[in-house]
Picture 1 (cartoon, rainbow over the protein chains, first blue to last red):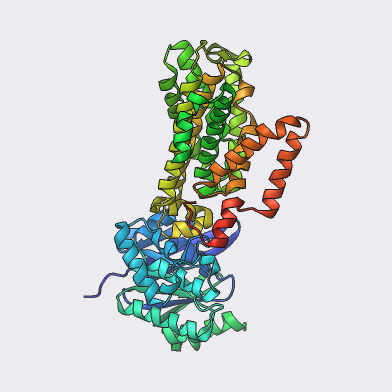
Picture 2: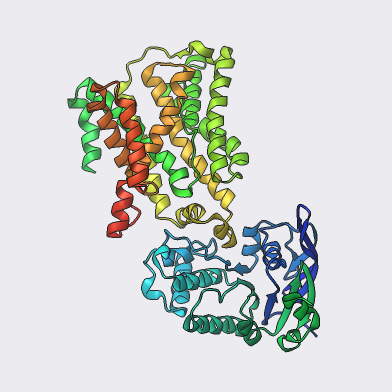
Length: 236
Length: 297
């Protein structure tokens, strides 16, 4: 028997004024897999992310996380139910230390939170910098802090908005290894990414958006040769 | 500790003027510290914080004159009234983002002043309320000092707690805070309630001490501005910044500026500009960054 999906998006639609940013998009994410979400600029990737995380309220459609409706919930409730995310532009808390950035979670005892935070900082080799203000860290280090901060709640679904943007090769490989590690620990990952090498190397299934609609879905190899996808990117 | 002991014995040996001046200083420490709780920690700037002072002053004055309450429970009731007002106002207004909240709070103060002037039966309207004559300066002095100490202690407890960290995430990046599962609205509301209690009590004590209140004396915008300048000068978001700012600016005002009545406002304005331009973190904020000191300074 197949396990029920971690996340199902059914016919989600979101418009801003007259512009339909996401139109009747449906997808299902299974446990322990890495999914990619691609599409040209303005195709609705970030809006779909924002609908899943509660930053935007969908106009229509349903979003179900682990069997529970989450559409219309405020972002903090969705986060508490197991959705972790990173942002396209880094959003660490600059005047909190690296360790404090992780300690802000509302769950569990202070001692347990501290132990977990130190373990996560060790995981990305930032333990030494735990007392440094996050704003003083390098771009890559901030990216890592944001990445492990999201793991503090042990989310079942991880949303990554352009994890490879502005990251050097070494750091990128570390990040990709970390993502695979999460997958191996049974987490589900959905990432928006422009770097096709990353998408093709990492994702098992890719969804393609264009003008707010899902135009293709499948393994990366097939997607690359899909006519509608090529047309969306390069024109007819 | 030493300062606390000195303040405790001062009324026994000091002059009447000295006691009154210290009482005023305690008032400013409590007011600046309270403003810091909401605005210094969460970054939600309140331009109407004197509204809680005024609400406390009127609550106490009405309870003392009409209901015959003693002034001390009256002042505590002023703190409760200020908290209730904060709940009423915070519920809609804290859903507004930063600048809109600041403007809404400015409006609140003007509305309260108008309401107090209008309901003459209860508040005496524009002619104000006179409290029964009572020689209580020394007792008010101690309660005011205790209030200032309590506000500072609460700030210390918050800044060293995970609750405090979460308040600061709202200032740092509210969207990221929500994405971390923090109910930012609830956190802002708690901070706002805490920040209203001190001014409410202090307002009641000031009403008792002055013996007479009227709308323009308890709702002046300049009181809010003074709280803000004290905190910005001392260092927002720190424990001792508001205390330092209140002491330095109050002493400066008493000793120096009082001799130059015409330049007083000008100097005050100049300090605001200088702090914002040269030292936006305030004295302790700069030291904290430079020498990597904890926020508990």
